[in-house]
Length: 147
Image (tube, rainbow, N blue to C red):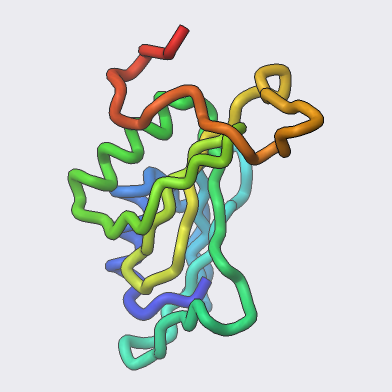
């Protein structure tokens, strides 16, 4: 991903998003990962403060997404995003998953989401996979699920 300011982006992706820097190359690319058993999930490279931001009305990548391991992980990240005044665009209820859509410092859209195990998907002939309501809320106390 191309960014304007490397230090600003590194602060955002490490401190706020919780990624770990895995490698810095001599050419200036930084590789980061949420899972330190993987080489990287994101590579960023600074191209300068005068670079234009992404145009979401053009063909290209709409957003990238990270799947959280647990719903509590998503709740914790959502709270951290709010605490750091990150621009949250919307909460997406996809029935089988719940996503938080946000903008990074360069206006790249990111989705962080939790998806129910497939054994819990409520699918029927009259309801599509992404219809319905996710059974939990981001603002509920951690560890509390509807029964």
